[in-house]
Length: 343
Image 1 (cartoon, rainbow, N blue to C red):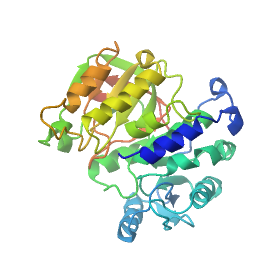
Image 2 (image 1 turned 30 degrees about the horizontal axis):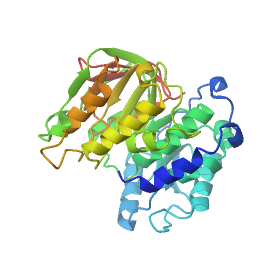
Image 3 (image 1 turned 60 degrees about the horizontal axis):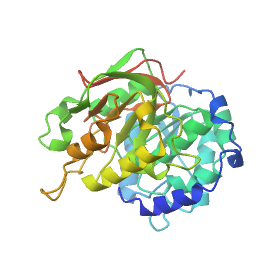
Image 4 (image 1 turned 120 degrees about the horizontal axis):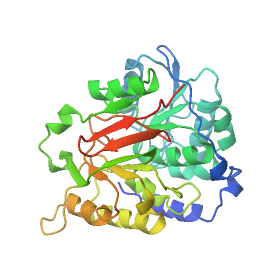
């Protein structure tokens, strides 16, 4: 993902401090689990990042409704301002509306793209903590997941955006995690993903073993861009990091992983679960491959690391609740949730 503008934004954010945002000390923040969704509930659809074309927006609404929910569209969600879905204020107001409207039981992001990171300094985190709700999306929505999870303790959900096709594998895991959670909840590879010929779908054990810890992470471009800011990862000790990306050449993956290695104590992680890095194959055959880069950057941490789990910018993906405890087993390429993500 091209994140040059976000990198500039992240550099500016680093001048802020968590206390300046009115947030509690991270050590005092307790996990908050949102209420589960039920059939027929109203879901608020927001566009905190880029604006999809009209036909894609309409398809996103139909997709969310196919899960069995009613839809309430945010006031500015169909707006467009350059590469953004409206001004920062419009997108921020929509986010705050979704958390404060009592009729809205969950919040679904229509798409990713770029722009969520611009909102982070102005988000009313106290409002969110007082009105905990399911927030789901991925890609650029990682910015919201990281900031909200770490500054409020609210469990958020790295899962399909509105424009994601609600295929059986994706839909099954969304409904199980958001509506009828059970523990332990074991997730295996998508059979469709296993059948793909592309090398990026091939599962690779970089360092074998089992790892157990609280889930943190998301899109690599966003995780690395927010490193060193009040909204990025800091204390990762004992946590289970998950990462994915799309459309990045291996040398860029190397650069982003190097930034993480130099900004947080990656060796203190419990383990690393890597999704499918779609369209990240090397275009030059004389350079390092994606897997070679991942082995070089992550293979000497002394923790379990596996590549190719069924999440990311792909057709079939499972949903990851940010903040709950989970276990990864590289021998079976599985992730098992040790606790429910909703109440």
